[in-house]
Length: 113
Length: 116
Image (cartoon, rainbow over all chains, first blue to last red; front, side, top):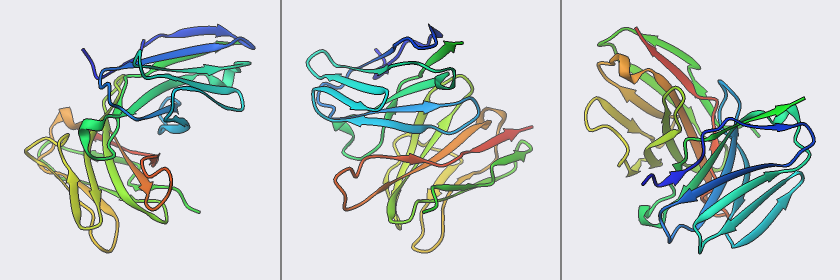
């Protein structure tokens, strides 16, 4: 089992729809979770961080964390073609003792105009 | 406030040569991380450094790779005797200290290494 798993996609949604991206992790004690967006050929760009169970909203983005089920998700409302990118889930496992991240392989999102 | 800086942005080396990748963290950040991303793959942690200290190098290959973050100057990732399999994008990230979110990492633009 991979430490952080994401569906590679592509996930295709029409413009204006809600895109739902999911991520599961194996280290039950993980405390810190992050979503990054990466355009092709570019570097990861931080979208959101979440530390507590529940929802965290920032503009069109909502991160959801469920530690009991070991998953974290990202919802993008009113999806735009400019949201088309790969979305990376990152987890800081407690076993590391440091601040390193474990990344999923990313989900490629395509927003169709 | 300048972001994380990396240079060079693109680096071409022949097999057997050395590659030196540089990273300057954001102002006020003293934690530096190096990640490698192979084509169509996720980012893999390599090493975590603070000034003059290697904190975690569990992701670094045991041979040919080394990293440092001196008291003055940028962090350097050094790859000796490069092989074609080293071709990848190498990203540096930094995180702040003394804040409520010390583990939030901000990424530089990356160095794309091509080994011929």
